[in-house]
Length: 63
Ligand code: SF4
Image (cartoon, rainbow, N blue to C red; front, top):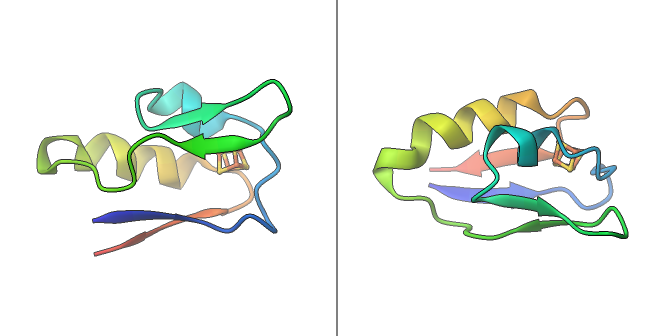
């Protein structure tokens, strides 16, 4: 699994960070950084939930 961010769509709202802070971080300029693009199998469920939580569908997963 790899996390993909559509930078044209992401608004730095931070829902992803609140759902999975070890993978997503929004900085002081509202720019979101993916901390680990390839989560381990044990974290997939958490990452899927975070991706689904994005209100503007900026996140997707490549299997
Ligand atoms: S929840 Fe969506 S819009 Fe907000 S920071 Fe995460 S990817 Fe960007």
